[in-house]
Structures are given as C-alpha cells and as structure tokens.
Image 1 (cartoon, rainbow, N blue to C red):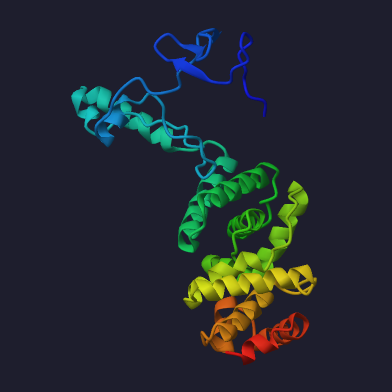
Image 2 (spheres, helix red, strand yellow; image 1 turned 180 degrees about the vertical axis):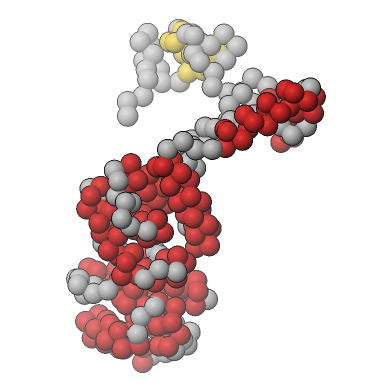
Length: 300
C-alpha cells in the first residue's frame, strides 16, 4: 500500500487538526486534506450507564437473531403506567402483535436460531462460527432446503459446516450428542447443504486437533511443541495423506508423551480423541518407523 506524500516537499509525515478537520504536512505546512470526518465520539462517559444512554446507535447486525438484531420494542414497563388506561390497553395490544411473526420461514428461523445458540453455548463455539452457521441456515431456509427434514438436523449440519470452514475442531460425535441426533443423519444433511449452497469445505488437518486434545489431556507445553513438530515432519513426508486427522493427532501426542517422559496410556489418548486404540497403535508405528523416532524414545 502506497503511503501518502506531500505534493510540495514529498514528506510522509503529517498531523491531523481535528478541530478544523485538516491534514497538514509537518515539514512545509501544506494542507493536504480538509473537511476530514472525525469518527470518534463527541461525548464523554464515566460509566456504562452513561455511555448506553448517550449513544445513538444500537448493537451491530447479527445473523444469530431472526431479525438480525434490528427489531424495536414498544415502551418499557415503567413507561406504560404514565399513560391513561385506554392508551395502555392499546400499547399492550401493539406489543402483543409486534411479538408475532408473520411468515412461516421467519418462525422457522426464529426457533432454529434459538436452538443454535443453545448448542453453540454448550459446545463453546466461537462467535464467528456461530454467525457463519446462522447465515448458512438462513440461506437453506430461504431456498426451501429445510422442507422434508428435521429442523435440528439442518441446524446441526450448518453448525458442522461452519466449524469446518473456520477450522474449529468439533467432531460429528460431539455435535450429534449435543443435538441427540444420529451422526449419520447429520452427515447426510451436511453434505446436502454444502452441495445445494455451493459451500466448499477444505479437509481438516491433524494440527487443528492437537491443541484441543492436549488441553484435555493436561499436557505440558514442551510435549505440545514436540507433537506439533512431529505433525509438521509427517506432513512434509506425506505420511498423513489419506489418514484420519484425529487418529494422526492422537498418535503424535502419544509419541510426544513418550519422548518427553510424560506418561499417558493409549486408552486415555483414545478416549479424548474419539478413536480406537488400534488406530493409535497403527499411526504410532508409522510415525516411529518413517520419522526415525525410536532412538529418541529409547534415550528417555
């Protein structure tokens, strides 16, 4: 990106006079720009209540709400008692009708996003993935992809697609357990949504799961660094090609615990990673043989 230069002296150092809205060259005093817009706030606040009352804008738009956070509410509870009884009845009637949603799609999206927020909070899904999942579900509902399928399965498929797209490691087993659905149904719906909406999902990598599994196993930073080093070497030699990423990540962590003398059993690692002990043993042998890690384990 090219820096702005003064047309008179070629200097790149400027000062902004916010009082008059001018950008001035520090070297020659030439006015480079005028009528500059100040995006800062023009008030001071000393508490959260003062800031809330003085702001003239609301919360940013969000896909996790059916109305994107743009709806308004008619009157606060205390304000309604300041009007006459007849006016109060009219306001209560308006509030009742305002809460009602007109179309079937809006009703469906409202209930689906409430379920999405519940599961997202349970699984500790980051906000960016929640926004993406809500956007995917809204698109699916507008295109009629929800028709003939359970709402929960489409929400689960959208959430899994969002986690895959932003590389947040959440397995089908975890999502199916949170929704109490069969993971085969979620996987089928996920593939259908991606195909119909043209969503391109890249395959997951073993590194996506390393830190999460290590946190659940309570491993030391030294062991985690060694596991990451093993994964990088394995990917460089294409050992991970065609292998399940969770199995490779679990095997790399198991090898790292042996090298760093931080004993963990195969059963413990398998339970955290959601794979079998046989998978860990197979991947373990491949990593040991092809990366020549046997000597490092024997020297500990």
